[in-house]
Figure (cartoon, rainbow, N blue to C red):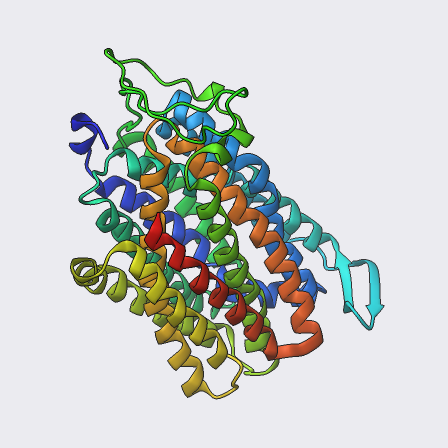
Length: 432
């Protein structure tokens, strides 16, 4: 449970940081697939480019999470968002490079695409952002620091709402800025400016949340006692926990953590297969423009704000977090089936189910993970969870592009099947 001092730390600066950060990311989202195609890529290259960020985040997130346990959340958030700012600077630089083929590939499996200099710089930009990309896991750890068991789910719901508000404004702004003669340049400049603004807000408005004195009630089982998976020990005095002693493999000895990390992996895997294939689907089959894709993302996020706000609050009064994960996952799996259709009515119907399913499931799942992680190692465990998400993202984004190149819209059925597996596995949560 958060200390009484941490309970007094206001939540709104973190929500503002999350909103601005999401806005900066989502403002580029609608036209990224068009940019990759213009630079010579195809669905597979788009998937690989999208996978670069989680691939490097897989390395950086646990380290940043551990550092946040040792040195404080605020300092690590500054480092992470500083990396994002540098990444956008390189991204902007890529837009001014000549599109000249370095080499081309024509394959029945991978399709036809060219590797150009701007594409390589985009890969480098995403790598820089990824290696410092522990901002989500550290922000989740910060949120856990200042939350009590009573308001934890509600706070994670507010965090999700702030993200979705960013996803509403970002794509809409991208459609407006991208329609000018400057095309992608203005949205990228806006993303760069927003990253700088995030650093300013962290530096001047965010208070440090890492508790300096914590009652240690958990310890990692000794090597000689492998069967003793979880233990509690009451201390007569306060002492600072030492996250340096916690190793990556020790995380899996903590009670229920392994199961939650597996669920985390499958959720991200299903999502990211969809995230790669859907933008390509809109270009190839639906023939949408940048503006139409931006409107879709804005509508989707708008519904999520409604669900993760008042709907989630009312749902938590009637259902436990475990049951909301189950309910949300069955709805979410169903929505992916509807995306197979090329009918816009079905597509937007799927968006409603997507928003409802994700809005109920994801904040509830994050709250369960936060409770299980405890206070002493919150940052490190959130970082490990982020690495599991990154690993799933790497696999999902690359496979998503490859599958779409082979089977087209039927790729969404793969996402549906994976989320239905999550639905079945989630019943175990009722017994934890």
